[in-house]
Structure formats: structure tokens, C-alpha cells
Length: 212
Image (cartoon, rainbow, N blue to C red; front, side, top):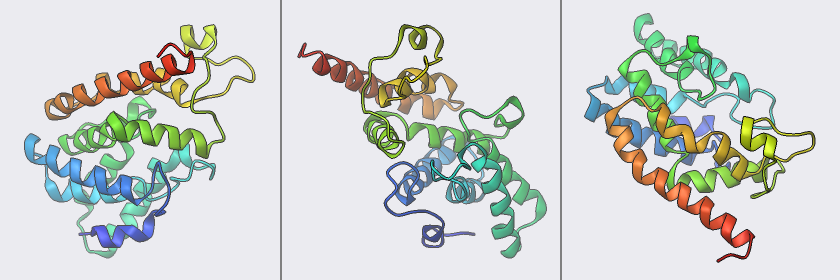
């Protein structure tokens, strides 16, 4: 079984979005959800440690396929530990299924995959979600806040030259995350985190406009 100590070598220490601290939080939340939902803890723990192990750098050009690269890497790691093929495939399914923008073929089917998806997505809500979203915008050279165009507000499609600020990401993704969760346990946790996230961006807009 891979350990947290072993996983440290697979992740950057200072990355505010997909660094090792993200893995620690997902690991802890995945354990909590797995116990509540009756999932296989060994599968969940391994998937949590390995789910972002490859292509987590947003500037690497590999982010869109990081779930596939991480699933392949998981096979290498777990095969070396002597895991049976069926359990390796169960971990790989969890990893492939955790991507928010994945296709229908990647949707989580097992309770373990649903736990990993939910644990990962809870980490973009609440106070941590705010910090990570701003961190991601800064990493990508984008502003913390920019007024979205009417086109973006209506369709989610930016006009030419429009930045993708952290507020854009909130509108495009974060405010919808709670609707995508699978487990009752995660849904209950998401309610408070979503309220905090929404309140933060409402306050941010008001301060930008000097209304508060």
C-alpha cells in the first residue's frame, strides 16, 4: 500500500493548487467519506494518493489528460507492490473518474470512485476552494477578479481577449460543484462550504465596486 510519505515524492511541495497539501486533504476526506459510505478503504487510500500524480502542473500541457497519465502511473506503482490486477483496475477507475470535466466514459461507477470524486471536489469549495482558485488564477497569469462579459454570463463562453479570473472559474465551475457530488455524506459537507464560497465572491464583487 502506498504511503503518504511515499506520495510526497510525486507532488510539488509549494504548488497552491495541486501540491502535496491537496493530496493530504483529499486523502483525509476520502477516508472520512469511505467509512461513512461503506467503501473499500485500501482502494480509496491508494487512489487518493495517486490521483494527481502525473501532469498536475497547469503549465505542463498535460493537465487535460492527467487522469489518464496518473492511472497508468498507478498501475506501475501498484504492480510493483504485487497488487492483483482487479484491484489495480479498481484504483485506476477511481483515478480516471475523478476529473470534473471528464467525458461520460469516465463517470465514476463504483462507490470507491464516487468517494474519490467527491473528496477531490470538496477541496474546491469553502475556504480552501477560495485559496486554490485564486492560486490557480495567479499561476495562470490571470486576475483574481475581472468583470465577466455578457456572453460569458449567458453561455460560459468568453469573448476574444477576455481573462479567466478566479471569479470566472467560480461562475463556470465552482458554484455548480455541489450538484455533481455523488454521496450523501459529501453533499451534507458541501452545503456549508458552498455557502462560504458564494458569500466570499459576493463580498469580493461588492468591495471591487466600493459598495461595502
